[in-house]
Image 1: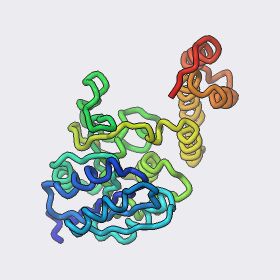
Image 2: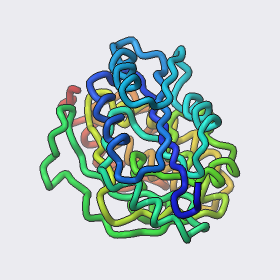
Image 3: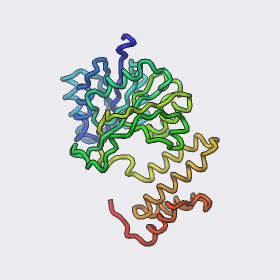
Length: 294
C-alpha cells in the first residue's frame, strides 16, 4: 500500500450491543476512504449480536471472530496484533462514523509523524439514534494539539475515544493497551503522549457517540477505580496530587446525591487542604438533597 493511501485497520470489539452493532459496522463500510481493513470481534455476547454480525459478514466479507469474554483491552490487543494497517482505529460497537471521517484523518496524518493520535469532535445521539439538543452538543470545539501535560492535567478539551486514529508505530512503541486497565482511551492517550507524541484533535465532527443506559461512564465505581489506577502510573509527576484530588472532588460531587456510599468513600480520600467549592457543594448534596434515581 502506498504512503499516500495507507491501510487503516478498524477494530470493533462487540459485547451485547445488538441494537447498535449493525449501524456501527455499516458506518465503517460506507467510508469514502477505500483502503480499510475491518476486524470485528464478538467478545462473548449473550444477545443476538453474533447472528446480526454474521449476516453482514456474509454480505460484505470483513474479518469476524467470536470468542469467550476476555474484556475490551485484551480483545483489542489481540485484534490489533492481527491487523495489517499502519493506522489503527478502535471503534465502539454502539457508535457511528461519519462518511468522511477516515479520509480526513488519513490526509491530516500524512506529513505529521510527530502526531501519534488524530482525533476530532463528536455529536451526541441517544439510544434510538436521535441527536441530543444543541445545548448538549460539543460540535464546535476548535482544533487543539495536546502533549502529555495537556491530557494529564486536562488543560484542553479531551480527545473523544470514538474518534481516535492511532499510528501503529506509536501503539507498538508503548506496548499497546494495558490488559488490566479497562478504561482504554484515557490510558492509551496518556501512554502515547508520555512517549513524546502529540494528539491532534481536528475541529470538526467525525463521529456520533451514542449515550445510553449501559455506557461505561455511568458506572461511577468503575470510572473511579479505572481513572485512579491510570493516574497512579504517573505518580512521580509534579502535579499528581492536584490531578488526583481534582478528579476525586469532581466524582464526589457527582456521586453525592446518586451513590452516597461511594461518595463517602471518595470524601475520605480527599485531604482537607484539597477541598474545593465542589467538595462543599457535594457535602450539601450528600446531607440535604434527595437521592437521585437512575
